[in-house]
Amino acid sequence: LIIVKLGGSVLTDKTKPFTIRYATLMNLISDIRKYINETKNAMIIVLGGGSFGHFIVSKCIEDKGFIDEYCASLTSNVMNELALHISRLFNISGLSTMVFTTHSIFTYDNYELKGDTKIINHYLKQQIVPILYGDVILYKGRFKVLSGDEISWYLASILNADKLIFVTDVDGVYDRHPRYPNARHLPLISLSKDLNKIRIETRGYDVTGGIIGKLKIGLRYHRGFEVLIINGLIKGNLYKALIGEKIKATKVIP
Ligand code: IPE
Image 1 (spheres, helix red, strand yellow):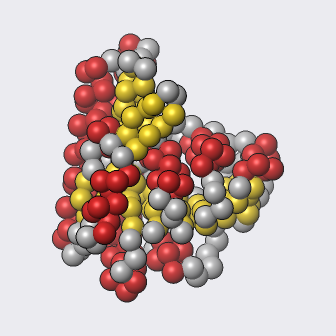
Image 2: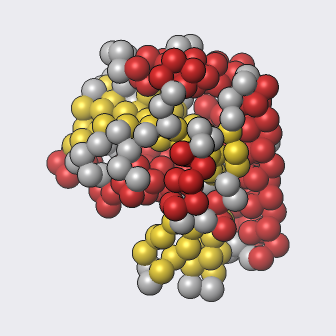
């Protein structure tokens, strides 16, 4: 089983509300189709919020200070629509994807995230590729953003995935924001040892903490499966990562 998180930074232009990066998305879809056709491996795809989910949530927090029921409804519907749209593009390429309404699969049970993986498993067995997405879910009577990153880590951990790939707009983790010329690329990062080595701020609309957030969540879920952070803007990179060919990326170990 492979979990692929398609980050909001590759799916969308994070600085412009509701903008899909179609050329990139079509390349990613074609890499996934090629890989699944060749291997018949099971895969779950998780979508980030990018300038869809993050934009709406940022606005609500700016206006009201929290996510009220209207904002939750809007965020959830916009993300569901984005997921359906992307799922249809997968269909057109010939793949059997199906969107799972994420807030009806995940809940919090005493502070702990719980997901109904049984239902996902049933569909995986029938060669369906489930698509989930960063969503708004209830947490102690309040709405909270559940990031696609956390969903991905959770599923990889609970379902014993072989590989978890985070597709982003950079070649993995740098010791500082890659726009600085002296930023150093880190090919390997240990969650327990190296988290203090990086200082990165995120661009555009992001309410879930960018790359550091992604790594910190991993502390809770990493069980030793293979984890890669790759650049999805480079054509063919995702396919290479899927088949295990070497590319410039960051490998994340516990
Ligand atoms: C956020 O998901 C989802 C919402 C804001 C509703 P992510 O945090 O995984 O999204 P990206 O990949 O950073 O855009």
